[in-house]
Amino acid sequence: MSRIVILGAGTAGTIMANRLRRRFADGVKDGTTSITVVDQDDVHVYQPGLLFVPFGIYDADDVVRPRGKQLHDGIGYVQAAVERVLPAEREVELGNGTRLSYDVLIVASGTRIAPEETDGLTGPGWGETMFEFYTVEGARALGEKLATWPGGRLVINIVEMPIKCPVAPLEFAFLADWFFAQKGMRDRVQISYVTPLDGAFTKPVCTQVLGHLLEDKRVELVTEFNAGRVDGEAGILASWDEREVPFDLLVSVPLHQGAEFVKRSEGLGDDYGFVRTDLHTLQSRCAPEIFAIGDAADVPTSKAGSVAHFEAEVLEDNIARFLAGEPLVPAYDGHTNCFVETGYDKALLLDFNYDTEPLPGKFPFATIGPMKLLEATYANHLGKLAFKWLYWNVLMPGHDIPAVGAQMSMAGKQPVLQDS
Ligand SMILES: Cc1cc2nc3c(=O)[nH]c(=O)nc-3n(C[C@H](O)[C@H](O)[C@H](O)COP(=O)(O)OP(=O)(O)OC[C@H]3O[C@@H](n4cnc5c(N)ncnc54)[C@H](O)[C@@H]3O)c2cc1C
Image 1 (cartoon, rainbow, N blue to C red):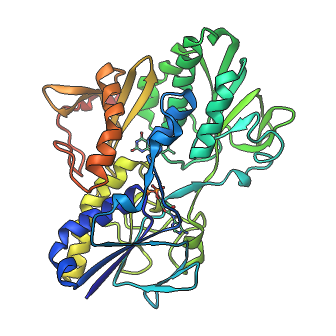
Image 2: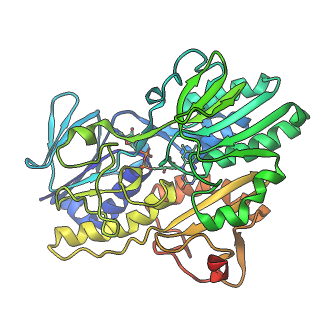
């Protein structure tokens, strides 16, 4: 009997459960394999869609579906909060006091925003002049605010890295520029992008090639700004080194942390609650039968849905190998793929891994594309919109994406820019 337990039924947990269900179809049928997924609620959010909610492009209801319905027949679903993992006993303790035993444990508990960790952020002005768009409630509230906002100083701030989808705040700035232009009030809005990084993007080549985008869209860039405190009443965002940025409307991307239970589970995570994980096999550093996937893992690549999907292809094989007593394959290369919406019905596409920065070129086919890397095009924008359909109908059921493998391909890429 092999008991596989997955903690989290978001992007990564759902993909993994459905892939393993297919892989171990015979075992599930004859009762020698069980797959159980645990999550604290029944609201699966298509998080990339949250970006569009504040601008009225998607309604908040468009991005949510019930969790259990995304899981194939034969997968057990337990709705409960995870209290802690007990690696020595190979058990998971749930909030209701019950325990689940496992032979393989997959931690897919993601990351969550912690606005309360920044002094003043959730104080006076929170929900009035200070917002976030990383939750359904936050995105909806910000949408209501933007619909009637008369203009002023709009500040978009990343409190600290890592965050999920590191390009989402930039996309927000680009869409804000477009949104206010369409409303005929762009001249009444000053947009500032305030980041702890030394450039707009996390990757140097991107920053070099795409730095002009912010200038083109009249978005002021404030770099190396480590937010320490916010005064909602005075409308001031202050850094630890006492620099100040005034705002009329603050869109914060708050500090991110891993799930609390990871911190409570001996040896499992780091101080932020991310699971200490091997970069290439996705086995935890805590115990051989524990693995991590998606935002929950501390691997140094983007926290993105595409990462969860590529990791799942590798992890599915490694779980099968582990259960068969075979050595794991160090096959995950950090592959990340993301669309960056730039407004005006255009988007960029980035494709990179642990070793190779995003490069220009064509994707996924070397000759025909049809998408272009590091270039704002309409085809890329269509790709971004199509991702929603792909998410629910291809990724969540645990299928591969045609022509896009788990490992990054150099086909169609032009390596020349990396040294320039
Ligand atoms: C605004 C925004 C835009 C984005 N845009 C993109 C994009 O364009 N492309 C892209 O690839 N990615 C994008 N992402 C990132 C992507 O959505 C995430 O990286 C992805 O969802 C991570 O999947 P996950 O399964 O690791 O975490 P999640 O999907 O967050 O799932 C984690 C699950 O664990 C559960 N959980 C946590 N703690 C407990 C507990 N104690 N007990 C029980 N259950 C628990 C949670 O309820 C949750 O369901 C975006 C994210 C945001 C917020």
